[in-house]
Amino acid sequence: MRAAFAEAFGTFAMVFAGTGAIVVNATHGGSITHVGIALTFGLIVLALIYAVGDISGAHLNPAVTLGFVVAGLFPLRRVPSYLLAQGIGAFAASGLLHQMFPEHATLGATLPAGSPEQSWLMEFILTLMLMTVILGVSTGSKEKGVLAGIAVGAVIGLEAMFAGPVSGASMNPIRSLAPAVVSGRIEHVWVYLSAPVAGAIVGVGIWAIIRPRENGP
Image (cartoon, rainbow, N blue to C red; front, side):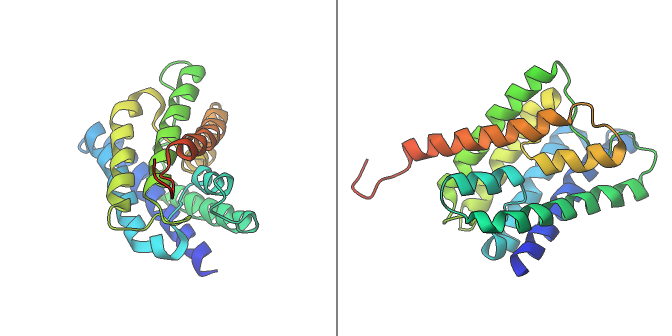
């Protein structure tokens, strides 16, 4: 229960701050800017890894949780409680933003700038890279350590910086699902549910090939 609550709180904070930056930027004349939005996502994840990483692992992302399962680092029996907690946190954040900014049309939902296929491939590659980095700096299924928060936060900020204008740089099914459902913009949500999960699984495969071995390279 303590880990599930940490996941719910962490996912709430991530979605509230990240998509909140998008909403505030749109409603206050672009004062935050695209760079500011990317930094917000990276910094909030960095902070949460240090805040709850030793409690729940700070997954904050169903694709990451499933990636840890595929990597053999997280028990399958704990997945339902994590996914439920992440969903509760994300929907609570989007619901609160809707109450605060009812005039905003998307609440920070991710939508393809080009074709859905282009965004699917972008999200797949982004999540593949993210999962590989996470596994490289994690201890078991926990994103906790001196450099874990910096590495993961940096890659999220970097990917949001260059790929945000293309696909929204979600890399996270629940981060996209919650604002899409609450705002009613669900027409492309399949892209952001399937691509991050597929990317995380392939990222596990890449990590399995390149990870350090006990007997050397």
